[in-house]
Amino acid sequence: MSNEYQNILVAIDLSEDSRQVLERAQEIAARNRQAKVSVVHTLEPLGFAYGGDIPMDLTSIQEQLDEHAHKRMAELLKDFDIPEENQHVLVGMPDSETHRLAEENKVDLIVVGSHGRHGLQLLLGSVSSGVLHGAPCDVLAVRVGKDDN
Image (cartoon, rainbow, N blue to C red):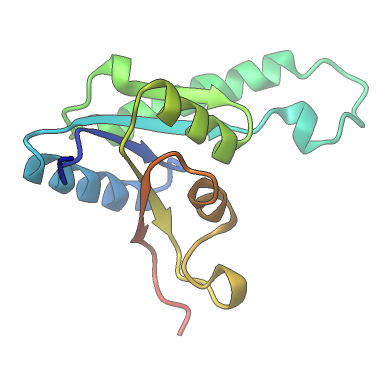
């Protein structure tokens, strides 16, 4: 079995910290014979976020959020050589959608950002922690942001 990664999935939140996570993934890809790099951002469904308590159709708002996420991803990725077909904006729960995409695409490394919080989330935020648990492959948490100390 090879110790090289061949297929890397980068899960980003579309913040400026995402650049640091993307840069780390690109470095790993370069050291691994230009491994394939894909990027995913997952939007939680509005109906889930509001518990279905809002008696209105949220479809157009969800579509606007999706459009904004695509535009923001394009802005973030303009300096990275990642083909459009490897750029994914999904709707669902971030951890389960990341796992599903990783399994479908035979990903061998997921790269996520970590904010270095205290307590139970000492190394990982809730989404990063969710991605770690149940991941079908290795997970690398890249420390981003400023220390709270």
